[in-house]
Amino acid sequence: MIKKIIIILFFSLNANAALEVTIAQGKVEPTPIAITQIFGADSDTARYGNTLRQIISNNLTNSGLFYTVNEDLYIQSDNLVEKVPRFEDWKLIKAQFLLSADVSKTDKGIRLRMRLYDVFNAKEIEKLQLTIPDENLIRRVGHTVSDIVYERITGETGYFDTRIVYVSEIGPLDQRVKRLAIMDQDGHIDSHQFLTDGKNLVLTPRFAPNKQLITYMEYKNNLPRVYIYNLKTGEREIVGDFPGMTFAPRFSPDSQSVVMSFSDPNDAANSEIYLMDLNTRSRTPLTNDSGIDTSPSFSPDGEKIVFNSDRGGSPQLFIMDKNGDNIKRISKGRGVYGNPVWSPRGDLIAFTKLTQGNFHIGVMDINGNNERVIVRDFALESPAWSPNGRYLIFHRQKRSNLDGTGGEVTIHFIDITGYNERVIPTPRDGSDPAWSPLL
Amino acid sequence: MLKKLFMLIVAGFFLASCAATNTDQGGDVDAASASASSSSGGEITAGTQEDLIVNVGDRVFFEFDSSELTVDAQATLDAQAAWLMQYPDTNITVEGHADERGTREYNLALGDKRAFSVYSYLAQAGVDTNRMEYVSWGKERPEVIGSDETAYSQNRRGVTLVSN
Image (tube, rainbow over all chains, first blue to last red; front, side):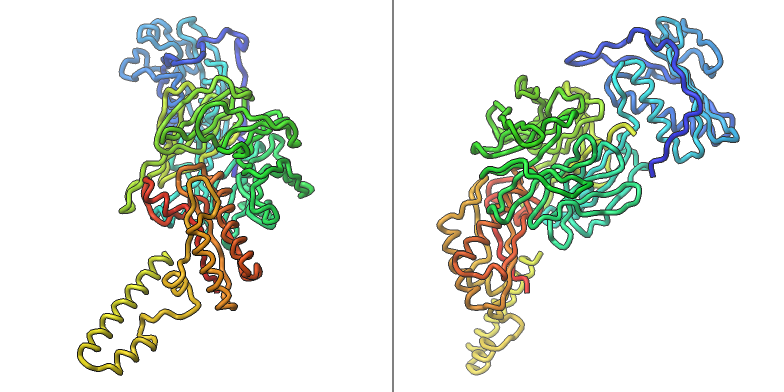
């Protein structure tokens, strides 16, 4: 399903040039970028051009780090792929960067050529040409170009050529039909696809770092167990085939293991954390105490695991070594903590906290210091990191009423500075979002 | 949905009783007593889920973030155990549920502990474990829809379901 984009030619000029945007804590002033028409000689290529331009413009704007200068202001209207722009014209309308591109048909497929210019320094800073075999990859090309622009200008890794797996929800709140679904990071309907048919309840999908597998929980024959869904083959395979409920799965950073909770009938159905080696199928208990231990999440180096436990009374966050040693509580504030997720940069842990009647999604250092609330509402859950560690997605649910109304649940995107929150559109309600690595 | 179905059956039973009473007032005593002892569409069959709901109580409730059985819960389970002894061919599944004020994963764990509390209480009261299964639904299947304590207190529950 995920085809490789064939990059025929890709080279970068001035790779060591200084970055133009400084990203620090707090609100960032979006950088103005102008995106010319993406030129095409015939109706097909012109259509591809429009689609690409829209994808790139939406992506950059949605990041919160850019805004697209209004096209009506553009003075120069030429194709600037083979021609030096009149930088004065673009400076006048305060475009700090300028992107121009064109699309054409070749005997190898559809070819895109792109130039990125630094207007203030009057120079080309990126140059790209790529060819794809067919138009099914147009959206991915749009995301790839967006990543290149984002990376070149901000100096951070991009996140646009990625997918979100989530749980699509429909029906009455006491008989909810839930299906696994997957879509591009921007939630575009053309990219949306259901993975399961809704017959069995499914929960908490998470990507493998190798991008091909998703681990999740499914109630097959009313037995709640951990499964793996293979995106290449569409096959589903049970991995948590224990003599009791398995849940809360996540992959290890090498995609070779799944860490999950097992509720052991021989231990009063108390949940402990287990590591399952996917090659040998051997399972190793990592925790052993009388409290609930769940929601494990590996550090990106694979050395530590953060998890949720009520061993001290109320649910709090703890860190342990990958073999279960050196368990330490890290959450320090008041409230009920849950859902810890280690940032892909390794420096922060996102979590939920229930206190004073509201859920909060926040981040803290890995030693629990510098706890910071990012968003607060009646019901928030399931924080998941963008692969570059700058953004979170999560779900937000409205209050429900006795007459069965309310309870709408939607997926949201937010910068970890707490700015730039927006809804990621889904055809039905959506919950439990998880982000893929860069494809 | 099952619960709603049973409520309908129970409602049907009461309607049948009213009809019988009316007939009774009409002086046809034989017809009234016949309708009370035969299955005239509303009769509860002994040893079934509706029998358990109406005559014993199919569920127990839990405090917030707790899987401890309250005194009330234990009394209900004593009655359930006696009922299960009375109908030894009956198998059950115990469902554990949580309210919506917790994370999905924590509530799955909590629901399983609640289900197990009921399961092991019944086992200690003499019910053969071969007759019982248990499962957690976390916060996925609320009994009452609503975001207030009235709904939550009904949703923090362990439900005994006759499975055969």
